[in-house]
Image (cartoon, rainbow, N blue to C red; front, top):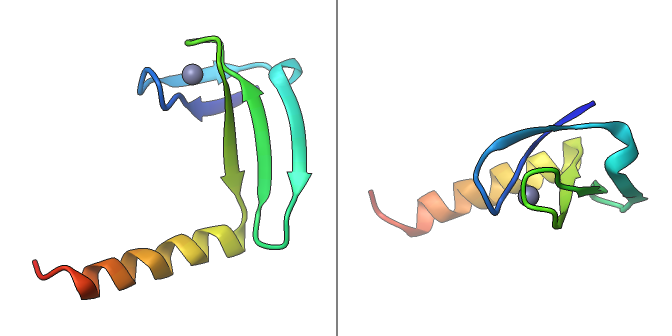
Length: 68
Ligand SMILES: [Zn+2]
């Protein structure tokens, strides 16, 4: 079972492992494509240490560019 955040409904959805359509390794992250139970569409969820670090670095850059 996986807990995913559906970007269409905004709900947290618990999906079974047989709803995973693909798992792809990339240099910066792993992309997991899941058929969503809530909206019926497929969503790509990206995860991994390097992906999280890249997101944190982008957030820091955004904070530097936009005054609070
Ligand atoms: Zn969905």
